[in-house]
Length: 131
Figure 1 (spheres, rainbow, N blue to C red):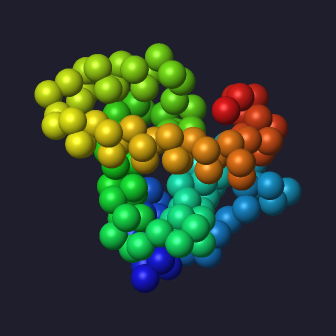
Figure 2 (tube, rainbow, N blue to C red; figure 1 turned 45 degrees about the vertical axis):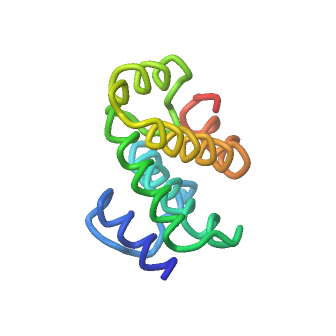
């Protein structure tokens, strides 16, 4: 089930579920490496949550919330700064139910903890962006 969730998430961000491309592979151009890495980071979130013992429905909820947050700025989600998150929650979610705002905030918080623990150094090396 977790692999299916990862493939579904990946298929929405790439041409389909394919084997993982490592952004650090020497044969990729910098732009290709960054693009591949932008796909790898969110896709890696699904098995990490599964390894933490979360149920499939909980993971699917996180994925749905992250997709909705990630569609708001036209940039990779891991580049979101606190001011952009404040703007998102203040503008896009102003009229949303309290539970929706809380769930979306929890998904975003968990995602950034995952990114910081697993990919902080890679992101900085590839893009110069500090998570």
